[in-house]
Length: 285
Image (cartoon, rainbow, N blue to C red; front, side, top):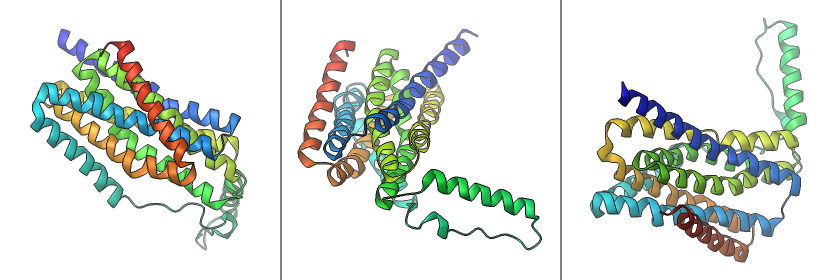
């Protein structure tokens, strides 16, 4: 009975920490629609997210896996995590939003469909058009693709929170804080191009917030699995590190350099790394 109680408390703590980290994308979205940072600031902020991710991966996740599981466990786990994200990116279709104007979209309706049903469909199309009409289709597509990427990637990112907490509650708290810090610029990166493209403030904020809420899924799965197979915790930490490094190199840095400014991006990466150094030192890891 005591073991069940401990397991339930651990799972609730993992879900809470990952949920708090995931909702930080909503905070980033709110910042974006209020302050509307420019291109240089955009590159700087995404650079911070990249610096946080890559430093957290090597300084903490892979290092802990190496210390407690050995170099082979750390190497295999890291490689599997990076390969896993590569396969997700390779096989997940990239939905090209914003390539067509919304008023050119047509919905097929059956001949026997009632007029009231067609009227409801028309109202939904008009509402969608009013909320998502774009001035700059490239910006709108960028924001949506970033949101999709964040939603897809936050599930394995949640594994880092779950594995970290099952390794040590203090370490799980540290990872959740670091990922939350990383999620704020990602929320800005999601909401900013949507808002600047002509979408409403609510659509931009809602998209940024929802993109981060997949994180508790990965955290819960990791906690449930590692509660029964504690020997896999070092490998899970390295796996999460591989996931984060792939996301950083494949998406965050290229996006920051394309839509931001290269010097601002480099500075942001350094600031992000320093933030993890300070956070790790303050928590005492």
